[in-house]
Image 1: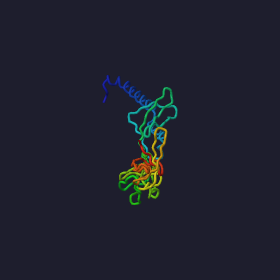
Image 2 (image 1 turned 135 degrees about the horizontal axis):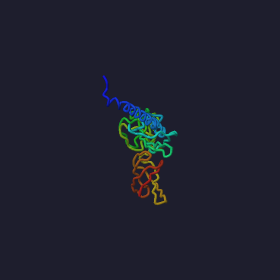
Image 3 (image 1 turned 90 degrees about the vertical axis):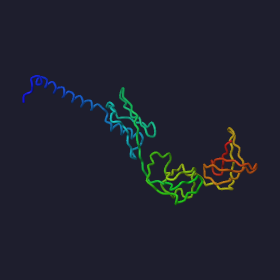
Length: 227
């Protein structure tokens, strides 16, 4: 079937325009930085290569192709800045979701501060520890018989920061009552009136005045009293 003369005359022009647009699209795509490179730079900046990490980039992100290797620096625990050092160059803040799993010690039930930890209170479970603020405990034997520095709920993952450092204080133990007045320290003899672990709050009696005070255990046998 023959095309009308009007369409036949403009058809070569239409084909030429289509070829030109196709070439422009190909060149444009080739001048954009691959998103995979940006993601890799962000993950490396956060040192997240040892776990499962995902750099979050929108599908509409378009950055000019960089002639140099991309530079990445951590700007937070879950954010990295990826930068191109070209002139003028560019920079982009990239959120990174990190997941690092390990078999760690978890509490079966709630435990109060100062309470000795027993084996039946502990269980080992697979947990995400990427956001832990202290090293997680992986062996229950490490903490059996020790006490917690603070109360924890059931299901809590135990870290080294949760365990009281030093022997627990018991009722009747002799203590030093420490009071700070500016840069001056006043120390008096006292006696503990209850059990507590390192870092815990305990009531104590001033041996001389018989006054009862409350303070925090800041060192073995030392109770710091706030004025």
